Amino acid sequence: MADGRPRRAVPAPPPAAPRQPRRPPEQLSILDEPDVQPRPTRHSGAHPALRKPRGPRFGEQFDLFPARVQVERLDPRALLGPRTRVAALWRVTIGDGEPHLVFEDRHGRYCEAHGVDCRAVREVGLTG
Image 1 (cartoon, rainbow, N blue to C red):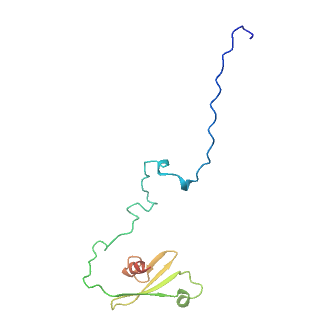
Image 2: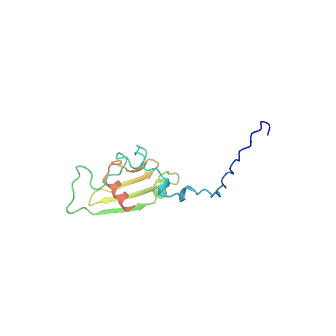
Image 3: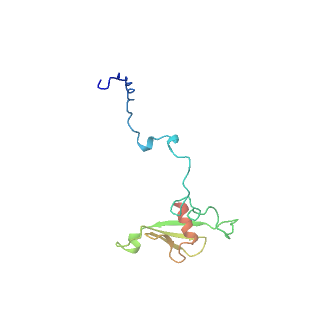
């Protein structure tokens, strides 16, 4: 040695552990996820303003003998023409009243005469 001191022995590094392949995200366990759940935003379906109402609407009376509801799906191309943008069309008859025409297009579902808040729109939503 140049300065006359003996060299110290350097320990060998530990052997490297074999690398395991990374798991895809769908195979992660619950332990890999954070404990904190994100707060609902207006754009997520968990926000109270975006949830669909369940049961009768506020101020709507429960019918002891409900009126018979008849929902009939119609062909929009036959009734409105081949160039229509209406995806679906229903004729809804509630009791003995006048029939409601419910349209579904890029704006959503709505009644021809009463708009989105019509009972006929809710009845179409219940039947599919």
